[in-house]
Length: 102
Image (tube, rainbow, N blue to C red; front, side):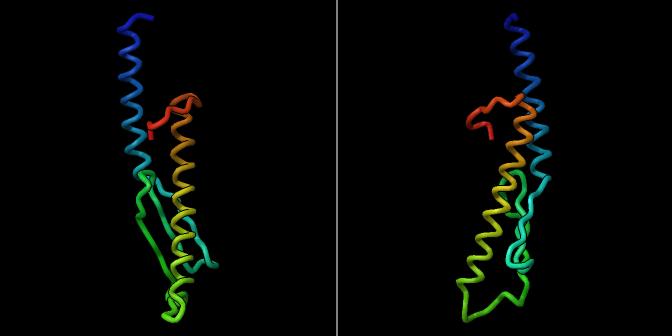
């Protein structure tokens, strides 16, 4: 392989990566906890894009329960989003893990 071919392949990979990053920013992962009382949605950029809290779970006398439910929903949605990104990146890289790529 000559240097021109390597450069073309690198540019092609970079273009595919840019498209994938844009697409993943529009894809989401959602987690629901507490019997559906708290729902968190995270996008492929690992941003919390939606948080739903049922008013029945809001108890001023027990803020710790609400905090725990929110943390569980956000953390689980974040894990699902990371798994989604990793799966899509694996398809792009042919299963090779490139540290720091995402």
